[in-house]
Length: 122
Length: 315
Image: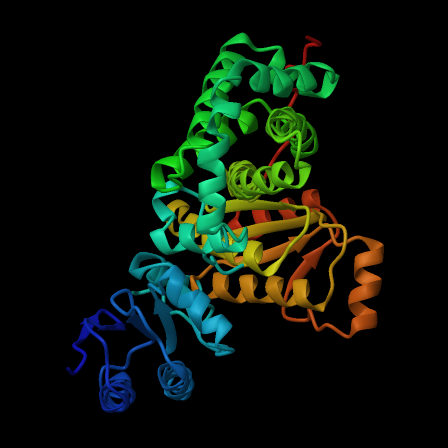
């Protein structure tokens, strides 16, 4: 199932609704890379609240998305990681280094507002 | 610690008929023995009071058995069960009901905090009393008396095993409950400001506890919407590489939830040993003491505490 990407001001919000295949993840990466340029976005929020598993491919792709969008001028924040998912990620030795994280959508917006490069006209 | 099925059934409901059979095989109770037991039945049943008295008189001699002898209601129940026990012992039927009675008696002893060692002494006094009656029935051939007594002793050993198991099971259950309680108590997560939690860790940090601690911290982060957590390890006496690894995992898991963790209270010894072990805590923000941690957290969150005139009055 492809991930819907919403635009809110200068922020793109990718809200993951169900478990994703590797193909869906790659498609998400491509779409975000493209839309960040098209909408001149400064921030990307990926909401993973609905995910109850995250494997190595998913964490790697999220790192990839963060790196890609940074090159395109947008900061990526992953929000809504569940406690059990967080424990699993750490225990599997996976990381989200280089990716900003926040508790939920609201905190994610806060974080983007605070970042130094942020355009105040959000 | 994985939950494993105990080797000894804890409750009467866990005793399968095959378990009972097996236990009877353990004490080697055969058809001959059952005949012997029927033959000496009067020696036990006709002198019930004498035998029961031998058991409790023995207990009375020792201060350590006050838990039972000093509590009339328990003592009364124990006496009643003991009488039933002796009658059942020579009935020849050692099924489920019999086991259940043994369990009840074992639980009475364990409620009375009766030590296994004292119980064994008293049980021996009881068996001696029975033995004397049986042997005196065969004045001409003492060896026959001995054979008969041996048969009944097999049942006695069968009983002791069950009663001791019941006493042990009761004690183990208490220990498990206490462990659980300590575990629950030992990892509180406290909110001190909006968005700021403190997590004081005291005592030994093993894998099980580290897991539980991480779990409760992550849930607290979500419930309190925390952004900063100050983890104080002043109360952790030793930190080896395993414990350090647990701490790193906790910090990283919290980071995935969008909270940053400040570790405080790393003592000089702990710091030295971490460096010696070559554990890399470089990704973790550490500060000397809890106060420093709180001040740093307040700075991050934008709080500023200003000291005013105050209103201190000695109580």
